[in-house]
Length: 209
Image 1 (tube, rainbow, N blue to C red):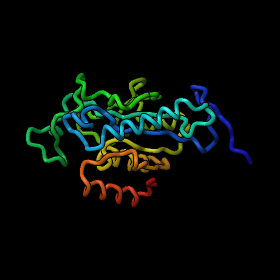
Image 2: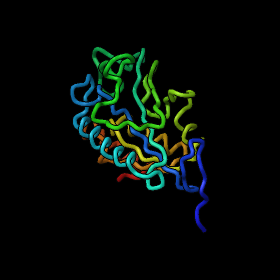
Image 3: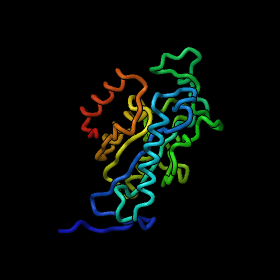
Image 4: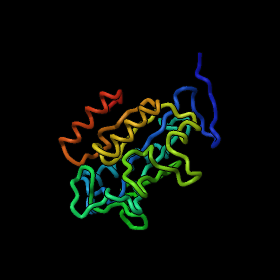
């Protein structure tokens, strides 16, 4: 039997239980080379994701692997002890992605930016997972936004593998989404914590590809 063909409120075609979204995590200036909390390889990850988004954007709607593409951003106003002048780089960090600064913007290598929604997180507290964010339009959380559009599976990419990518992917599993992390489109803060993050993701049932 063929899968049921349905249409979302934005008239995007998707097939029954095969609705997939791409979540692009925190590909921002401050997390790439030259930023206040740069991750080695961040700018290249931005470029590679941009290449993927270009191909997705140019494809015919019924040929797209993803029915939706969304992004998350750190968007700090006063996140308390998440910022520190003497950070431990585990629970506290130098100032980064401060609202109203260039550091909060998406890296220019991330081009195009055909996002269906952007979810900002961490305004007044530390927030690693994109599922802690709210959309610009309507203030929906990421899980609710995805469910409203019939999404069942998500692919996750971005920065950093061992922090916000890890947290976002783990929460996606908790929320019941089939979850894949595209490891070639991520960059980690440190080798040890990145390897531990990948182990945690495998243990939680996240697919790594």
